[in-house]
Amino acid sequence: MPQTQRPINPWIIAISVMFATFMEVLDTTVVNVSLPHIAGSLSATIDEATWVLTSYLVANAIILPMTGWLASVFGRKRLLMLSVVGFTGASFLCGLAPTLGSLIVFRIMQGATGGALQPLSQAVLLEAFAPKDRGKAMGFWGLGIVVAPILGPVLGGYLTDSYSWRWVFYINIPVGIASIVMTKMFIFDPPYLKQEKRRVDYWGIGMLAVGIGALQIVLDKGQEEDWFSSHMIAILAVISAVTIIALIVHELRTDDPVVDLRVFKTRTYAVGVFLMTIVGFVLYGSMVLLPIMLQTVLGYPPLQAGIAMAPRGIGSFFMMPLTGLMTGKFDPRKLLSVGLVVGGGTLIFLGTLNLSAGYWDIFWPQLIQGAGMALLFVPLTTVTMDSISRERMGNATSLFNLMRNIGGSVGIATTGTLLSRHTQATTNMLGANVNIYSPAAQATFARVRAGFIASGSDPTTATNRAMAAMFGMVQRQASMVSFVSIFQLLGFLFIALLPLLLLMKRPKHQGAPIAAH
Image (cartoon, rainbow, N blue to C red; front, top):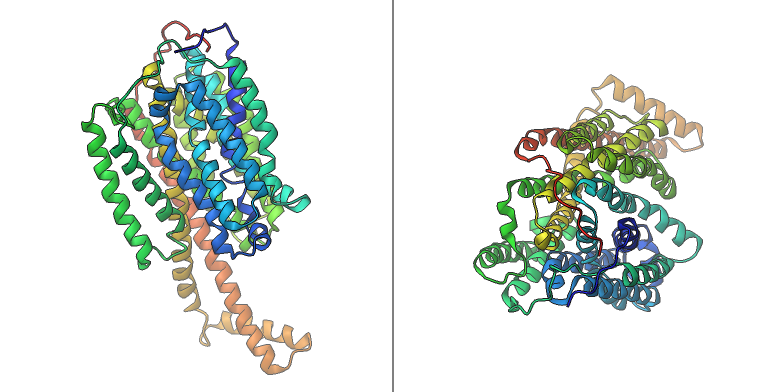
């Protein structure tokens, strides 16, 4: 039965769910920089240690779309409490893990319990605020979604260097306890959200787990295994495709679906989910590319590369609240169009950099891009969810967050593959011009060889070192060309989304305020 509601300031509710959201999103990236330390501590290879990341993402992706159904069965507050308790407890166990196998098991538990946190917190916020104030709510909530993945590598690097990789997990415990206390005190199930005695869609749950789980493994391990040259990846891709198609057909026909896909009949919602998928693709893809470029091409140490990523978070941090205020006063679709142009423009600018790029050449586009992401995220969420009824909000936010995460996984996999393939092709193209018939190549070779001889190398060794050095120059140039080409591609992809905004309806901003719960 729903609990008795008390008049509670919606901003108290916002803070309550923000703890859980920030903690869960942070964990998607905070472990990345700790992998070498985890591998060394637990006597594992780096490849084996990457399952610490994959296991979390797979479990998270499976549970995420089921959140709306789980909330209707167990109650939203109860599910939120169970998720936070489970996530916090799993974090503690991850910190204690004595072996890699046990750590992977605990990470699966962490991903499964954390999968419901994003859609639950978003649904609670959208209902706690009146429709006209939802932009402010999403501006606050968006701070966790956009800033946490950027802060993750910096915090992870600091904790690992200063203390131990285990503190990457222990840091969740105080945040989790605060979230549990505030959820218990301030969040209540609304009257219309009744616990239902529904037929359990076992087929839907099974197909969802297999299809989404296999897809996540394919996306996470594909580049590492050279995609379809690996029998494992090929088999998982077929299993995923067949199972997801069967799931869609089954869920549209059953009376009690675990994932209600009928919500996509609402055109604005369907377009909004597609746009969020592409936003996830570009955001996560570019977030992975930039630190790699800074370290491998421009020579930044890992911690400095993480700090160089901070301006994006700073831009989002200051722009999110402002965007929330503007969303209530202006047509959100116009703000969204500005966000697409700003985000696309900054990526295209990053596509003009070269090997002489300095820190400020990275700082300013990152700062502006962070502001653009705020102009993207807040209006897009507000417009997309405006036409969804309160009863269907939990299911709608589940699918919305799932597609953002899948878009991010596809973006990371695609940009990684494009970078590898493009670098190989560009290296071959540039290398073909470095030959004995090229005056520029001859002059460079003679200068480099003379430098090695002057440093004490014998002529034969100097020749070999000069050839290796010139090949390194070609590779570095080829890598830079590949990075900037992909940045330009991602930027133009954002710009190409502008016509889709015409398909979305302006939010009504009508109706009585929804009671806090």
